[in-house]
Length: 237
Image (cartoon, rainbow, N blue to C red; front, side, top):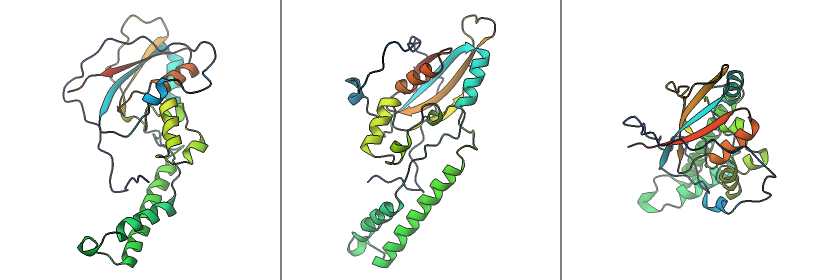
């Protein structure tokens, strides 16, 4: 069972040291046509998102009627939290076994001390998760929250963040294994070509681990057919 320690965090994605080099814009995400596939495509297996320290920076540019852009920006803003279920008892037992399995000088705690350590670890994990859940429906700190735009079903959340079925769902529906990091509203986004009256542009910047969230963007485009979405990977040094 993979554990995320409350006093440890995954390394933050790096800040670009120099202004990112722009690549040619890919075409807008296609509008949905025909029926949705009933099962995973051949590419799903190779697109499985896994935790990694390789970070990709993206620009997401959205164009369309100003009123619809404002509605999207409001809908996309949320706390940026995935409310995964955790099994406190399993975490406590796993930590106890790891601690007590050390022998000799490698273990500085008694068996009772290992049990206390495991219980304290569990309590810190549960307290951290409770604080995060309290922000749901209240905080709007994240300007582009995939969990509110393409929600993970409760049945998947109940499995936990590292369950194979949960990771497969994320790969198929998001294309990434976790929420984007360091999400910002891009202040430099411009209209580019002359826009129609009453139209505008909205831009986000964010990092993702290993892969790009194109499956999620395809679903978002289906839900917002009046807007055009372009996802641009940005090269960084």
